[in-house]
Image (tube, rainbow, N blue to C red; front, side, top):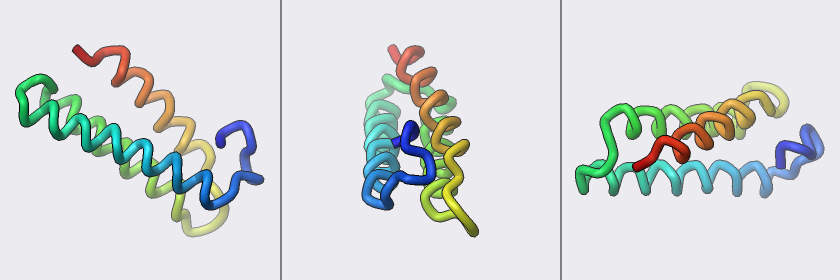
Length: 81
């Protein structure tokens, strides 16, 4: 989706947001199981906020927010136990 920039469809953008929400939901479950820290859960929640801000901006697509979310998600996954 990121490589398509402003030509990305809403369906593609929405699918990216849903993937981030799925990651956050997994972080919630891992937190409940004691396998994820408060910081991990907080970062996952921040990613959802970035994605929503990118999907539903006041004007135009905010691709940079999805790039920030992608980069943060990669860091989160790399640091996951």
